[in-house]
Image (tube, rainbow, N blue to C red):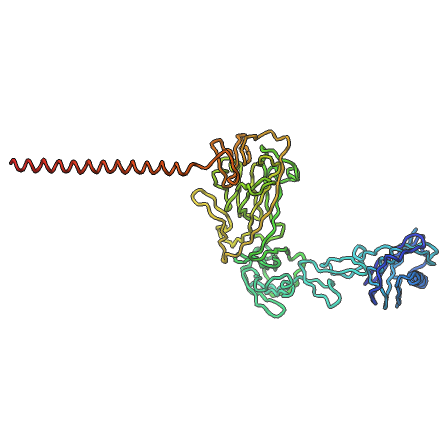
Length: 558
């Protein structure tokens, strides 16, 4: 059976109708509309013998729609019975060829769904349903295309790794690899179809075939040579392999997509001929993913919380409350697909009571654990940030902490994407050693090749959490690995000798040191020191005078 256009016709079991909800005519239109009819009972005969009855029945149904006064009208050029399957109930596939109809396919489907009729097909009721062309293999899509069922038709869409080279009006019927290759014993000549890559926002000048760049033409780009092929061989064949890709060590962030095709030429070991072939699915391992990252573009990040480092479904927090003795693992990722040389770094992490974001505790600063006095003794004891900037995700381990009178702690993480430019040294890795704590810098060819964003999240305290009840004032109580209790103070807080925290914006029991008295005390010290120095100088001068007088008297006596 040849299948070109299909549409649903749906019926109820009795002859009734409600046209009040149907859309007004917006046509005229002309289209083919294929329907699947299910008839109660068997239908004798075959497609040829029952053609006239089916045509007559369809006309009766359509005339009922016209008579109902819904504004519907039509001219049917032809109705063709394309398939008849006999059994206890019979399925009829009928193609309706309208050269004039007042309603579009969606509205016509809705009209059919609200109507039913007994027809002379076999004096039985008829029901209808959507005929899925794709599920019934009634399409002419390429094997390298996806079939998408629609009202009245179906669409063929070439798969991501293939280029549509169909003629006009037949999209998805011819889907080929986006290149061809001529293999030789000295390498290969690969011809890439420009439109395929350019439609994804990929510049042809960004593509490389192994180590080769291409010669860009009007419709194709040609790569030729040995191009640094990876060569393997066995007793019978020699294999040459390359990557056709726009991801390379010196690439910048890409707007659009990235692709990587593994291309292989296999030839008998004794071959000295040149041959051409179109790569098949088995010859190529395509990798086509969205990168969706632009220079200086804000990026959304996601965070998933876990209670251990297995990162399993069972350890996922999923809104469960936490105790101060728990471990908390925060895994940050970008929900967008990124190229494998794009690393994620956590630049900052801070927490505050959900009710007062101004009381902020810094946990990570400049990609490293915060070094402020107020936090160093407490939360940092259970915090770690391994391999920051060295992977496509980053994990922070910490202990939960909660503020006074606030059961929820709100956190904000600042993150960035960094382009790893290759080489033995990872330019995206962040060093936090005592000798050299690096600020988060992306040492790439252009300093703007970094994108950043943030993610906000929170967690709640378990009502049964009995640990960590130290009075921390405006701060939060945390425990270390052996359950010692510490106070974590917000940035710029005052801290007393017991570790309690006080917001400088509020009037608290801790007052700033008496600066005036301190200044007076220091002045007195300076004066006393000066007097002491003056006394010493006077003593020296007096000693010199006395010595000189004695020396002069002795000289006169002689």
